[in-house]
Amino acid sequence: MTLLFALSVGVLFGSGAYLILKADLLRITVGIVLVSNAANLTLMSSALTRGQAPTYPLAPGVQVSDPLVQAMTLTALVIGFAVTALLVSVAFRVRTSSGSVDIDELSRREQETERELEREDVSV
Amino acid sequence: MLVAGLGIAWVGAVMLAPLDATRRHWKLVALGVLALHLLALAVLMGLVLTRGPLETVVGGWPTGVGIRLRADALGTLFAVVSSTVLLLGLAHETAQGTATRTTPALILFMAAGLTGLFLTADIFSFYVFFELSMIAAYALTATGGSTRELGAAFVFAVVNLLGSFLFLIGIGALYHVTGTLDMATVAERITAVEPNSAILAAACLFVAFAVKLGLFPFHFWLPSVYTASRPAVAAVLAGALSNIGAYGLLRFGAGVLPAQLELAGVALAVLGTASIIYGALQALSRRSTSEVLAYSAIGQVGYIIVALAVGGTVGLYAAVLYAVINALNKALLFLSAGLRGWLVGAAFAVGAFSVAGVPPAAGFLGKVGLFQSGIAEGNALLVALIVLGGALSFVYMFQIYQHDHWRPSEEPPRPPHGRWQRAPALLAAAAILLLGLWPEPLLGASEAAAGALRSPS
Image 1: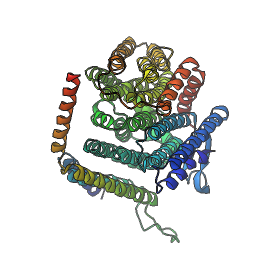
Image 2: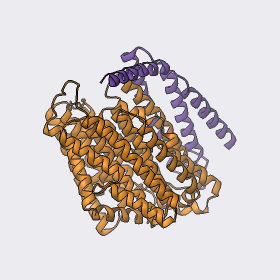
Image 3: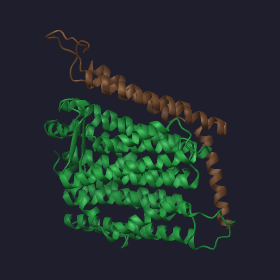
Image 4: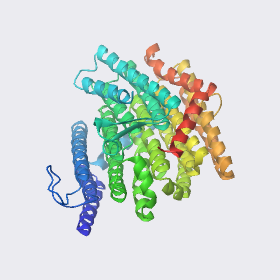
């Protein structure tokens, strides 16, 4: 079980990291989602006990699963969701203001602006 | 008092979020709420410094079950400094008229998040507050609207989110090996943990905080974000938000995982040195004010890390002192960077003196603290590094001072800056001068903060 968790976390984190290295803002966002879920899975697998659902009333002598990591993961999931929404909206605004979501394209434009700034600097 | 320090900004932020804060009266309300928040924190700090740490378990849970809020000298000092910078930033935005509809609410959310993070004794709620302030920061950097700003905001968010998730993984690891989320209990139990797992968790936390700080190999996002943002946003990011990194390294490094910090001492010293030299050389080669300031920020955090690597009471004291002064310096420099006039020039010069460590500016105290730690360590190389770094920062600061304030302006005259627009920068300069001339309160508070780390509850 631990090995399975470790492998899934590794695959999730690896694919997320691969996507983050792409030049497309949406792919990067998906990469972040994958990495955030790798972190959530790590949290889940850091539980101290396994067993039945920890709902009240508890039958005596029954081992319950650690509820704390579930609470933490739930919180982390919500935060991850909010952050994804924010990233998508920023990507959308980049798209509406520049017509492109390609980082290479954006940085090419930025370099052009910088060159213009330098030209102004020299002329002053 | 503890809950008041946290609650005022939070309630204010939630109330202001749906309102149209471009209207004058809501802006003033936001300023008032933030000022009240700062006042509550200042009172809290006074209480903590005179009577010792305050503690409360939220929700009326028994101790050991509920989340503990704990105000000690270190946390309150960072909370007061960050809130001061946020107040100055908000005042600057308001006076410049660049504030958008949501800016005041976002800054208040950031104040609430930062205060919570500085006052919690629970590692998971630390993460939650940390994300609260970071999300406010992501939104704040994206409010500008130009493509360059949005692109920088996206990069900022992605890089810092990666850091946050690494931090979350570190928390999971710490919980797994110690079985608790309470900082003091983690610190107790970590000594019995197998060293390899503890080091892995510590490495995750270190990378997360180093990304926030913009320490040398983790700095790549920083220049583009600081140069693309408005002056007030850059001031808030450099002066308040990067405190998370310094505080986190102090709290988790020296407070929770002291053995791991000691083990990593040499690595930290190397990274800090690289950061100082890289930041200073890059800053020297830049011409635009915001770029020089951004690279200078990378160099300045190097000193905090070097002091942390020295460790011990002297090193921690120097790290706290330098982090506080650096936050004020950065706020002052970014706020005054876009303004003109002889008064602003004088304020900028105060900031430049402070960065270079020339008395009577407060930066001198930070440099003295570093010298003390270098001498206590008996490390001539460290002392030489501080002198070299100081000299280089003097050169690059005055290069841009000369460029901005001495060169006869041939560009069309900008709209004159009124009294209110210059006030935040002047206030920051006055604060730095005052702290430099009457340093006892700051020195006492930093000493108490370093003491709080050496003897956790």
